[in-house]
Amino acid sequence: MANTVIIGAQWGDEGKGKIVDMLSARSQVIVRFQGGNNAGHTIKVGNEETILHLVPSGILHPGALCLVGNGVVLDPEVFLRETEELAARGVDVSPGRLAISKKAHLILPYHKSLDKAREAKRAGHKIGTTGRGIGPCYEDKAARVGLRAGDLADPDLVRAKVRHALLEKNVLLRELYKFEALDPDAVSDGLLALAPRLLPYVQDTDARLHAAMEAGADVLFEGAQGIHLDIDHGTYPFVTSSNTVAGNAAAGSAVAPSALERVVGVIKAYTTRVGSGPFPTELLDDAGSYLRTNGHEFGATTGRPRRCGWFDAVVARESVRLNGITDLALTKLDVLQNLPVLRICVAYELDGKTLDYLPQEEGALGRVTPVYEEVPGFEEDISGCRDFAELPDTVRAYVERLEELTGARMSFISVGPGREQTIER
Ligand code: IMP
View (cartoon, rainbow, N blue to C red):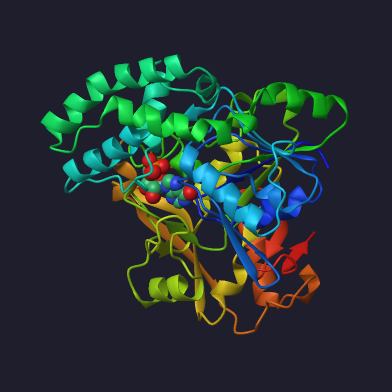
């Protein structure tokens, strides 16, 4: 298999975990390149469900090398908890096959406090973050005051950086947000207590990745969140704090852009979004509740109910263009069963004009009216189909129409959560 980037083509929660898991079986190295434990990748093997927040989903494939790239922000406690849980279930999480880039930034308690404090203060116009400290950690990275995983080997450096960070952050927490200030020694002690367990994982992942590639390994670059949550290209300011686009797979894992050979965009057969922000095809009626219940649309990370709506081909087309998507993986097609009609958003109307693209002015996407095309629904149970030809005519027509509208081929079609419930074309 060629070096492949997997990204979410909507607002996250497209079912990337399953597709990554499937393609991991054909790769020797799996790298996470952005985001942190705001992600939650659910993988179902047999009757066992695993939700991974930080460890690359490839870990369930014995022998694969799993790397947490420099573009990730890593919460040390979450990483250790996740590895312990995996180890308890017999998964090999030894540093020989799981490593963290020395250049990855660490999420510290003050990042989480600031994330929560800011959201609390934004009453009425919350972003709806996951509260995991993601934004504040990336802020420190950009402000050049962050702590990186490699710093853990130098306790004096850790203490100096934490002290320096809290000089400013404690003023904000205490005075502006009326939150509890944090004691620099307690924060440093807490982090340094974890260091002996973390340090074996903290490695020169660039060297390991390049050595594997030179030896002929195929690499899977595992994206988190979705394209429309990208800090530059998403529905700003209702976005996450990293670049989620496929292009960032290179910068976030230390390979050249020319190493990225194939881009798989994972896309749901309908649309969901967690947190605030514009969502043109959102359904606030029974059809929305039906999708939420039938699709188990509750956040894997925060448990929040997801907002649900029709497939938006404008959003999908933009994702194909921004990421150079070579293949789409359509997920949760089975969830649409028993809806009498299916609607597809093919354009928007805004101020008397028809748009076939997303308007870029802040707030404009929140004012568009979707233009819908209607196609017949289906009643058949498709969860047992393993070949495109086995799908009912109406379902095939829906998929083919989505291909036409997005301009990309649906190479994978998922008809249920299980590994085997996938049609590959
Ligand atoms: P943050 O990434 O926690 O700062 O949250 C920013 C926005 O991204 C919020 O709307 C979150 O709900 C959303 N978000 C972050 N991670 C995910 C994800 O993995 N899936 C879906 N939405 C996400």
